[in-house]
Length: 406
Image (tube, rainbow, N blue to C red; front, side, top):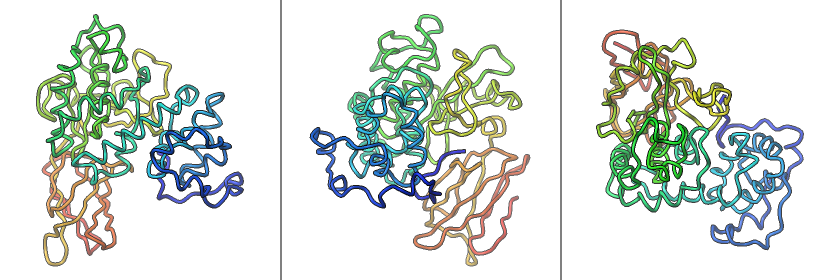
């Protein structure tokens, strides 16, 4: 199960109950600059450091710090030096960090990553409307799969921000990056000249060649560096030999795109192969890589024993993908001006604002929950299912209990 965000309730353990009720006053007065430069501040204990984090993250942070072994002091320093406004972001990384990263990643690496991820969100045209959970899961993380951990964030932020400065949506920005990144870095696809399949960004730029996996990692990292939510997706083909890796970018919904392949979103050469994926077997399911644990893992064909990369099974969104219209109504008719969020198994799969009629690509035969809110009115939550065949026109009644699907 995905670990809770800061607004969820915390069930305290006996250990948590002995912590101070509030962070140290001196820590609360830290500025962003002093947090990064003041080396005179005495080091904190583990309990003092964890107490600086939002309450919902503390149980997992305790476990992570305990598993960090000799690297625990680096994580404590990272927490201590994080500006107050960025502490939830740091908490998210430390609470969900893969085991090996807990023992190796240093404070400076984490601090720079968090700082530039937050900067990117603040400067992106879509940043203020981006849900926190999408930012934490698909912009903030410093890595995708099991690739080497490169400190690329500031470099890519400064290098590629000009390429997206006039883009108004994350999808538009991703398409611009797909053209700019590989030309600028001079990295091309090659099945054998690349040194290994799971190259980090700098390994790919050094080699000049990358696999589809390496290209996807590179594009996702460039996207995240400028505030675009993106993730690596892959599968082993069912009816043709081999495997393939691509990316998904968030723009109202998850949209697919081939890295270093010129084209529009959701219009790729591999769509036909993906539509025939076999969801009954782990290797032939289509998985989207995640940072926080999900209960399943991303199969790494080059490292089959490594099960540390969390993933979501997104197979139905390729094999049963369908255009869906969602209408919001009340007793007077269409209801516009609200915020609509659609979830599948607890995860956001579509969201938009302002209209009374929304169009998305969703998976048939699946159950969803819709959250709709207008201004300061209470949030309306409705459950619905998209039937397996036929057109899907869904009406969510904001005042009653019924949902019509035709």
